[in-house]
Amino acid sequence: MIIVKDLYKSYGDVKAVNGINIHCEKGTITTLLGANGSGKTTVLRSLAGVIKPDSGSIHLGGIDVLDDTITAQKKLGVFPDLFGLYPRLTTREHLEYFGELHGMSSSLIKERTEEIVEALAMDDIINRRTDGFSQGQRMKVALSRAMIHHPEILIFDEPTRGLDVFSVRLLRGILRSLRDQGRCILMSCHVMAEVEDLSDQIIMIADGHNIAQGGAADIIKSSGQENLEEAFVYFVTKFRKEKAAGEKNV
Image (cartoon, rainbow, N blue to C red):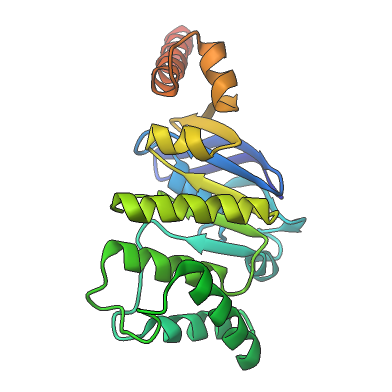
């Protein structure tokens, strides 16, 4: 479970996150939907313990991220927006390295590697250096690296960016399988079709604020629009008009 309450983060004069609240249950996929610069990545990096928010609280599986970052990170698998692979390492070496970082034994790393290779159909790349891999192959390595320690919570930052249709279809299936296993999944995404297809819950964000939340059908209905894209534009426009009016009256 992920619980975020009243999260704030500024970079100088720029207020990146302004009181964001998130609640994600086990066995669900929650998507942060927002334009570039809306605060999605800052929220995800705060959850991962990479950056420290100015205020607010973050709990992952009952662990306070700010008080006990290392223990919270053990519950977490992160699929970053930039895969960050080491080109001179093979896929197997990536998994061994990250397994050791999580304190796993050699025998458990080997067991988990075999499971992941089968699940992601990686027999052809497991012993190859990642230098020169396609985007789809790089995606598999980044995902396997995030899954090696069998985390109960997974974070995906723009997971389908740059992937071809076959890789996207594979990733969709993996996300659904992870959800069905009871994992708690939080992702950010721009692609409306992906958001609507995969999400049990959508949290719309604009300028670091929550602006709408619920299932796709509920959000569309409450906006009075025809589809999720139009609903998103409606809520962002409404929020910014109200924000401008409030600033004008101050």
